[in-house]
Length: 493
Image 1 (cartoon, rainbow, N blue to C red):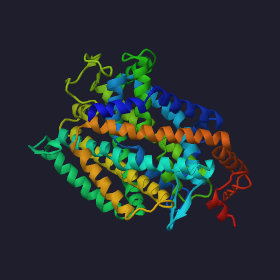
Image 2: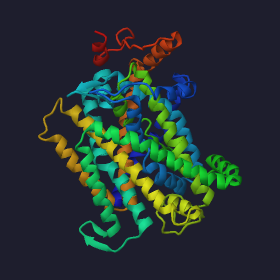
Image 3: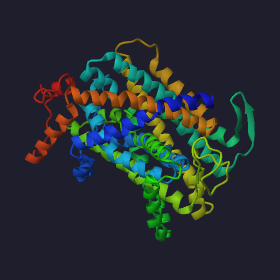
Image 4: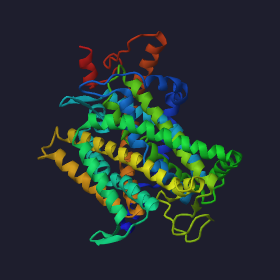
């Protein structure tokens, strides 16, 4: 199984996809005149705008739901894997893909807002919706929806669930094991799997509002606590920080693991972590009640900063400052750098847990296990919402008996399966899911740029109104030459 997953993953994550992710971010950064820099302060101001309603959620809630998908295992275990296979320089390329990816995140989120619709009293939208409405290609929209249900419903939850159970095992030990048809499972992993499945099932049967209310409380708290602890470790080793930054930048251009490994792993784990271009962010963005689509686009661009430039960087600095990492080129047998036991799985949270445990003995392992529980659990909740939205999209054309119940049961099964399997297998499955979605979504938003530039027209319109100092923003898609934006058209009648 692991070999099959590795082969498929190498096809999906070829250098073509890596170039596509970087190229799209660079293109949209120039086209938007680097909105990620120009509007940085305004992004923060927009977090206070927008109100929760019966059919939608606030801008901050949408950011929280989106961040709950972005801030997850990739920020803790994913960073360690990027360093382990790509060297310290991979961190630099994570920064690059995040900076340019913020513009991509704006484009896809604004498109999600422009082409959203009301479905059974709830605001819904995402790539499947804007592909159909803006491109006029229903088959493409259905292809994205099916791929996303497969990815976020079955593949990606395995990574998050595995991170929870593996970190718990590292923190509390195996406490014995049992033999099953899935292999040998430690008691700790089994208990963790059952707890996560029970809580997950309770929340997802409560609907998107319950998901939004849970994530808006948990996400800011867990991210802040994690960053504060990381800052504490950095301050305790402040004299080492310039050398660490120099090592990251130096290794980015003369990488010990090879140029391809540094860039490839930096981009792969960067996209997995911040999800810019992957097509997941627009689902939460579309559910927000805002005055203008560009507002939520800018809020989602800010979420990329929070994820990669804040949380991922905190993890990278902790790992590198404490020397809790190995470096080995993928497929090689010998280590380039070995500071940890050879058997340590770079796809697990072990490096990050060791980094904190070395600074806070008796506390670090447990803290990371708890942080990973919250990070990963809210990410699985976000995945459910995304899968649910795409099932709702397909429901307009196809009839599925009890489709939402089936989705919930399949996701519960995927969560349990991921929790009891190995980290490498779970990450391999997750990489395939991320790659497939990124291919379909980035190609789509590039095509939409050449077809009519709806996201850029929305930005220009918003900037005009902002410059004029209007109190209440409006969005008239027909006046801008944007067709099939039915929700906004009806808002104006």
